[in-house]
Image 1 (cartoon, rainbow, N blue to C red):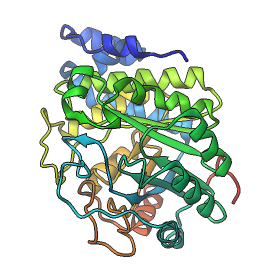
Image 2 (cartoon, helix red, strand yellow):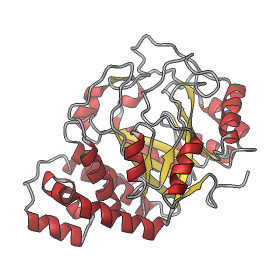
Image 3 (tube, helix red, strand yellow):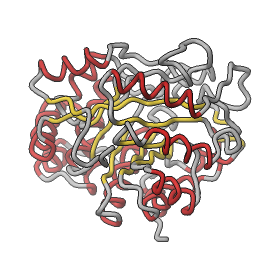
Length: 364
């Protein structure tokens, strides 16, 4: 299996500050090679132009359709120690793993709100959230949920193949940070500590037949958030070229408050966040960009007009949180607390089409 690891490591080097002329040239001919320029502080005075160009590219490539999805947390049990996560095994928090029947009940509640794209999320616990458990969950949801994805621990090719056979359509694997040294500092124990296994997981899923691939980095985890944005963009384009039959999406969540108490090394401002999203859109025009309810409503409303193609709505980040909130620890706090109907209404008012189910999804 070919790996792009070496190229990502090169992105962690310091670069000289670009000149205004270099920024203008990068805006005229955006590419992965000049993404660092578009992300630099020197490009911040050009933010309006950058956002407008990104908007034009998004409309050209994706139109006005915005896919809506909901995360469905099935467990917060975890065997990994991640210093930034509210599910870390070292934390004394309320744990819960849903039964398959409870997963179905949560899914039915989300479907009643209009969702047809669900993302099953869990901590990294290969006993409580085993491959057999996930297969049963996917099989139970497929009759009434056209598109089921997972965001769990990494698995082998054989396990992904079993999940695909059960009806799995997508897999999300955030590298969290592409800085190897920082990765080792924040992942202190457990399966997730293996950087290379984590990085290769998306390719394993693709080779097993998973049709939607999601990657991302957690901005604020490493000191150089711009390096992580560049690595995510490069990784996404690499995946598109090698697995051209799949759909590739990226997400750039910012660290939010959680039970871990972790604080970002370098906070990313709203303006910098818009700059990052717009720059990624210009250099990776075919990549879907996902935005979660971590971000505040006003910022989400603006970003959907610039670069975002998929967004969550009405989210809960605790197992069983849709029907029985408050019984388990949430992974992190959300900022946009609007209902799915309110988010859909916002999209329609802005001239966009909220897509609950699209043609790419398998028929239920």
